[in-house]
Length: 376
Image (cartoon, rainbow, N blue to C red; front, side):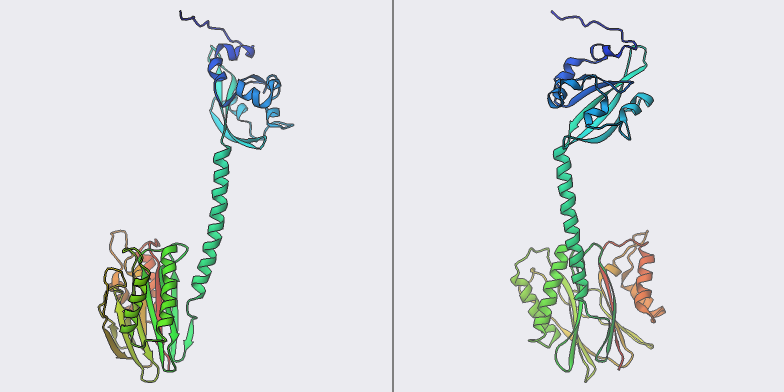
């Protein structure tokens, strides 16, 4: 036989609230802490879970004393719920545990707010995991900042090397870059220079740039020919046995300061460098496959040009050319060529400014701009 529930008229005597308006049997069975507070801030009901944790004497005490405080909270969600009728939530630390506290208004039979019911849910595990994650993220961020400083400091110094002047712009889309370039002595007569672009960006791509830098510095002591150097680089990359989606492009040239000849080769770097001076512009086009595991053996070709006083070579990566405007149009090699034609002076700033305007200031990829000029 089902027992008929008796409706109790709750007036200003709020001691009736737990027995009239709330199904206290449900509240007693909840694992979360539950309490009811009257308009005077007194606890008039607490469920079994809350009493077991904090003691039987919490009923009748001021609500804030349950939180081990001597005065009211700076932001009292109970008062807010009673005054506005809102459901309000905040977090409290009680006995070293984190609780999410939600306060909702309780109305009497006349529809008037007579108090508030609060539910305390223990979220200590979640908060500790969050704090641990925050600390780990802080450490990772510090490590990434350190790695970025290292990556930037291994770049060649701006200025004059023998009879070449080098300047550049280098910008990662994330903390670390997958673009890299270098300029180094090969012997007393020859200077090597390359620019490379690793597929992707971030940590994995930046680690690959370090492999390329170390490998090229080693190869230059053994091989002078740019084409043969790239073939040797491909062999060393293959030994790593990485996934098929790991690859990079690289343009490599060797400048002889005695003969002023510049010999170059290309491994899939579609952003071909541009040689220019006050009279002419000459793209340094030459085909070649990227450095990838898709090919067991690769042969590269090379070309040679003469560099005269005042000649400049602009090297760059596809972070520049693949930037898109609001119409999804790429900046392209054409955008670089047009900028060189119209504004050959201060070309690094001109290209970067045009690129930023074209892409509306959005950067989706790493980019590098390198300018080499013959000054003697």
